[in-house]
View (cartoon, helix red, strand yellow):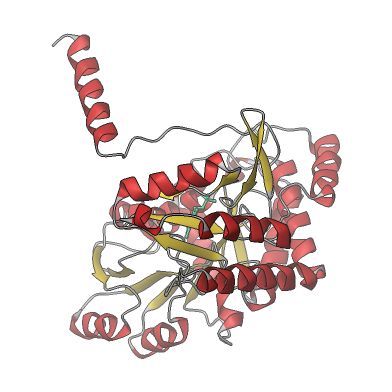
Amino acid sequence: MKICYYVSVFERELKELEEKHLLRSLISRSSPQGPVITINKKKYINFSSNDYLGLAGNPEILRAVQVALKRHAFGSGASRLLAGGSMLHKKLEERIAGFKGTETALIFNSGYSANTGVIPSITSERDMIFSDELNHASIIDGCRLSRAGTLVYRHRDTAHLQTLLRKTRARRKVVITDTVFSMDGDLAPIKDIHELCRRHKALFYLDDAHGTGVLGRGRGALVHFGITPEAWVIQMGTFSKAFGAFGAFVAGSADIIQWIANTARSFLFSTALPSCVIAAASAGLRLVERNPSLLRRLWANRERLFEGLKSIGYHDPFSMSPIITVRTARVSGALRLSQYLFERGIYVPAIRPPAVSNPRLRITITAAHTEKHVDALLAALKKTDLSLLY
Ligand code: PLP
């Protein structure tokens, strides 16, 4: 078969994507991440990042990176098991364990790598995973890589989860949920799921990527719900969102984390994060611990936006977090609305399949936004023709 055959196949498939309004293009900033970004020499108020506390460009983080660069240079050279890690990795793990109230913690190179590494590591063919239907793609991929079976329960539906847990015989049961759902902004019913896990002797794996730094005085969903982590609870979180840095972690009991460090393939077979990246995450953690006012500002901005949207006729019935969505009936409606805002200097991305089944604008608000930024978005939305949404 000639290579040009494949070229024409991809061309055709790309065209099909374009016709369905599903073709994506990459946006390249020429400014740092922040509440205002520059794209093609034009400034935009930015409602697209997960930099919830506005720390991505924080000078303390930059200073910590410079110091670590001087001391440790850049490349880490190997995986942690082959001495690719430094004392900074170890120290950060100890601090994260303290922050999350667990015995110990382990750093992963990203949230994606944590979920696709840990889920297959803690499950085998004799086990069953119970996964919320709107869990993040990295959890879905982790379940696919696992040899265990996966039962998907209806979104946030603990009655459905209970039925599935009751019906299932397996050596080990593992319930997995996002804490804050990344594309809907709602919260999992953590208290009820925790109780179900206790009753059914299931491991409870929480992806707290959007809860860490945002909920429970920054400590995440378990603190928010007043739950002390027992040995059968595993908390995953990222440094790439509210901490303004990069990388991820799992925190839990010493035995489970040691098992993960011995068996998670994305940990074993991947080069360690550079020390200066770890220094950035450490500085982000310190900033979260020492600056409760950042969280207060984040939530005040969130309330201003949420209530403002209500006052102009958009009510998001799902959002319980800094992620707020404006749903549209069709993909083309979401794209048009996003474009309309873009032309007015406001960047809010349209989210469409396969990321979600129902198209929407996903607005993320941060502590770094000013009231003026929020009001500019509200003013622009107020002027839109509601028929755009259909
Ligand atoms: N889990 C959730 C819920 C996420 O939203 C994301 C990223 O957006 C990830 C995991 C992956 O984290 P990372 O971006 O660090 O790979």
